[in-house]
Image (cartoon, rainbow, N blue to C red):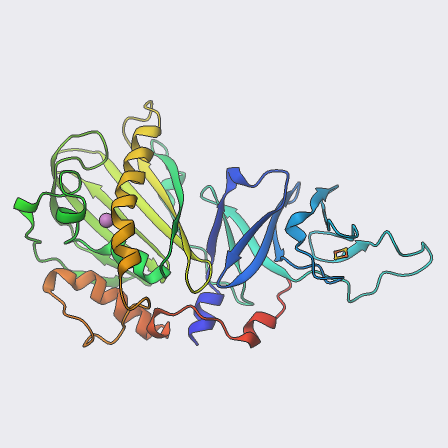
Length: 336
Ligand code: FES
Ligand code: CO
């Protein structure tokens, strides 16, 4: 059950701008995957040539086909082998000569891959195309931790005053006001949570920021920060790709509706710094798999959001937050 849920989710594997002419190797839930781009769009295969098992990501894209580096078998973007140079012209290409095709799409400046047969809907992030809003993409941040630990850290309100002291919080204002967590339209959303922030987004404009957090699926979450008396909105969407049982990569979309003429660097560098502050903590957390038994750790009222997250993972059957994939699932072939 748990494997099905994550197997059918969309996982962010690359910034779109980082996938150009050459194929690229990525990992999703322990699976080695090659992504490539041709004039029809973006595509993902199991990164394995059926001939002698070479990584297709070592090859090239030629005339829209992915060409293996070893003996130059050519695969079209539906995964069919359309050319075997060693085969005399009068011999047909064996029908078994196919690549394993996964679902792949480009959206919100990222390349997303789904390994499963029944892809869940991709998350919706309307701010990305809203007039008057601009998005900068951060990451990928490499983390030696499981995706649920990274998502939980993103949703954790009461660490801001300590890990990000002087920026996203101040230890003299460590109290977290009560807030609600609701399940609406298939995801979790909080009421506004006021947090005193000396430097909320890198521009050093301190004050109270109101956070509204949302958990979109087991590996994607977001918040929007606003300030009373101002129209400025600042949203961060985090999407985490669990590469295998030890490593994840996190991508972040920073969206703002102000200072659109300013370079993105200020915001990106600030976020890099914030993420680095969290890194040691997240990588240090034991057990590695998020404990979904709520008796296993202590919780406060201010942890309502992370409790909701753990409960949701449990309900969805993402057992113990683990992402381990069964061999049976690994072998399954997905055809678009
Ligand atoms: Fe790919 Fe031989 S291993 S063509
Ligand atoms: Co943090």
